[in-house]
Length: 246
Image (tube, rainbow, N blue to C red; front, side, top):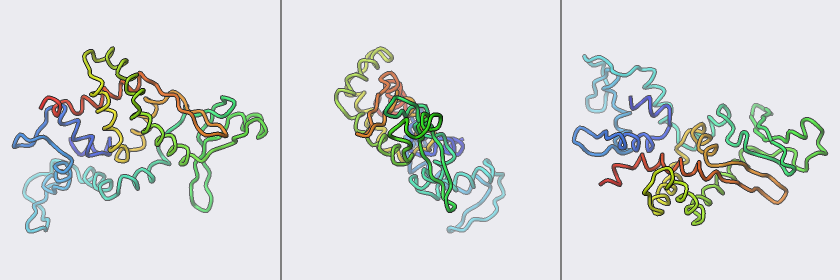
């Protein structure tokens, strides 16, 4: 069902693209877009209600979705994507878990602390935890700041011509006859929908694209996973297949 898909992904844009890729259309045969999905998700008819002049009444027909599903969907719709991401980030997998390393190539692990009722997240050097603070010049970094920096840098890297060319070469082995411009177009589509994604989906994509992040006193360095970028291109292209065919 559309509502269950929306709960899983948290993005009407991605749900619409997936439905289009599957050939699903409206009753009039038009492609499904984000606006249509929002109307669908707000239609009280599906929970057994009848609406007249803006007022909902109990209908004579049976509900086809549960009230619990309706309430969970509308709990999400009532929040902006940015607010939703901030609220759920503390309960989702850390964005850089297993990817981030300190100056001496030692792993940094996610942790958190609470002060005054607020939760603060960090990545802490394992060498500091095991051998003491003098073993690493960077003992810990604020998770929100380093994750934002990595994502911002990653967005820029995916637009870089050399990354596009490298990805295109790998993508040709996976998909055969694909043009460089198609790879560039697919990568560009990630940027505008990033803030709509649930943190868990953002983490999955980062794990797919990034091999490691090295933190030093001079900044951060990101090593990309070219094969992962090519896999993402495959995903993005499959969601826009009907549009390309048209």
